[in-house]
Image (cartoon, rainbow, N blue to C red; front, side):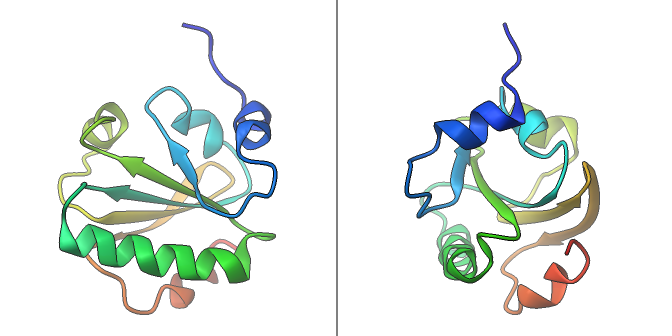
Amino acid sequence: MEEITREEILNNVNDDFNTPIDLNDEDIESFISNGANIVLFSMPDSKPSELQESKLRDMFEEFKTKIDFGIVNVFENQNYAIKNGIKAFPTTIYIKGGEVVDTIVGVQWNMEASFTNIL
């Protein structure tokens, strides 16, 4: 399978870029390869995952020009989560320059506090 570049992922999102990017197993590595990223690993029909996704979408509006936001549905895309030991959902990872700088398991009430680690 041909690897998708980070630029292709960002260019393939909707033109108005009004939501975080839905990531899958094939494109997550390229997505997190550089820059500031927040990726939420979420389980469908999970109230904590739904709450964290709502909080992430709220933060997206304020920080979308500084941080790339992605959401992984782990029910459909498990490989990255398994490979990296992500076993509980929701799990939010904060990435800077391709390196994970913070991992939060569960609902994070004050997401802004972790933003300073990647900006």
